[in-house]
Structures are given as C-alpha cells and as structure tokens.
Image (cartoon, rainbow, N blue to C red):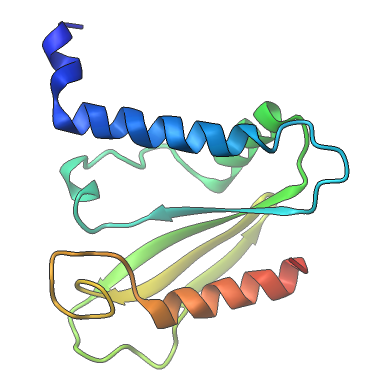
Length: 145
C-alpha cells in the first residue's frame, strides 16, 4: 500500500473506529462471572455506509457470533443485528419492528426508519428513536439483561 492511502480521511476514520471497537471488546475477554453482554451491529443504509456498497457483504449473525466467541473465549453474549428499512413517509408506521428472527447467537431485526434523525429529513442519519426503543426493549426482556 502506498503511504498516501493511510492519509485519506476515510482510512483514518476507519482505523479510529476499529481501534475504539477493539479496545471495548477486549475488556470482555475471558472474564469470569461476567454478566451477559449485548452487542449491537447496525447495518444501516444511510450515509456514510452507502459509499461502500459491499460494507456488509458476507456478514451475518453466525459469522459474527463465531468470531466474537473465538476472540472472547466464551459465548456469554447475544448479538442484535439491525438493518434499517428506509421509508419515505413523514409518519412512522404503527409496527416499529418489521422483522425479528432469532438465531443461535442472537437476533436479526429490521426496523423502519425515516430519513435523518427521527424523520427530520436531514443527512444526519442517526436512527429512529421509537423503532430502536421497541427492538431494544424486546431483546432486553427476552435475554433478561
């Protein structure tokens, strides 16, 4: 790789995000008596993830669970893998969870989200509070977290 590659803002950002995530996950390795952990993976389709059309290629609940279990040295965790379904309406649908499928390592869920933050229409795609609240409350209750 040319050294100029590592000077790109997108690469610097990716390295920073990876380092932050690694430091946090490393805290949970081989911990005896550790309470159950909930990992959340948001496979959002809003900016900036649309810049990498293969960002989530091959990523699924099983593959992520196996990697985490192998690295952590235990499987005292659950994963909530969320995909956003962008809706064009100004009003959020009554059903806040479109799909909720349990697997060996946790749950795959699809939630509706309007453009922006809580449908404010901006490019600040930070999610839909009511949809997130519904899916998080459901998994926390099921997993006794």
